[in-house]
Length: 238
Figure 1 (cartoon, rainbow, N blue to C red):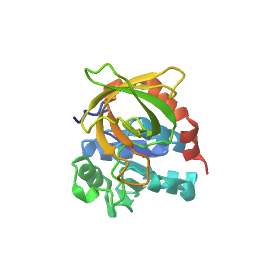
Figure 2: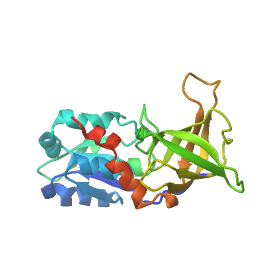
Figure 3: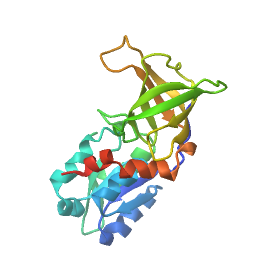
């Protein structure tokens, strides 16, 4: 089962106030919504809570923030195209993207990404949601089953998690109710579907299951906890 995304598709732009109207007009011309931030912290927090179709980094703002600090966005492990964008005096906006390699007008890039053009597929990363290595205990129960099974979180995002289970793992496709015991001050109850099973025989990594969350069960407290976690703050460290 594939759950629909609970947040409308959009692009996320790091940009100074003076250039927002021009870039918003370019995205609108491509028929896409764009959200603006002017701080790296807000860019990561919003991307973590609601993954964008792509990142637009206005060159002047990148220079202000520092190219070295911005380089971390190339290795977040997510599939969002990271586009550096320059505005010309005549109002033309062009982007440069390293993975995948593109250089073209912003309108064309936004339109291509939104349409699912395979030329915009990331060569290394395929995951939309930014995952954090936050440990915790998990109780899980299959639909129409009263028995609770036990596991431990290895990583988690607003889109899913990986749960280590040495035995009694539910099969692929199972619909689950999950209780995240240590995740927030109060246990978080969410629903999800098993989209991956890693058996003990497969590798040296811990066996367990990959779970895709039902976005309708991921509330503000869940998202806030992720963006306030020590693991998230470590992403911001220089």
